[in-house]
Length: 111
Image (cartoon, rainbow, N blue to C red; front, side, top):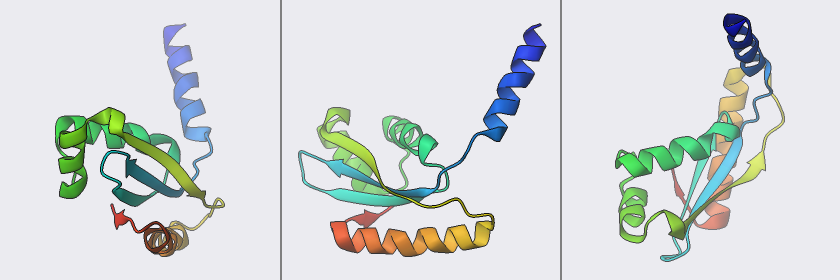
């Protein structure tokens, strides 16, 4: 019975709808903003906070701000969700275009 439940959970995970898009991370204390593109918006926030907690964020300015102000000074939000695209190449290209747009609009550093 245990393996059937596990198989069902794995199947449900594989069949879930993945929404790609652009997200923004803001530091309330410093006023800084960063924007990133994610192929799966549902998982990006967990990955972001995990990397920052470990001190392994690839963007030094974000890691420095996080270390200085702590988790409670930050917010993360999806600013745009892209329609589902069959072709990964087209989705990737669209994510890059929209990321550039949002970085300019928000005055954000790209992640």
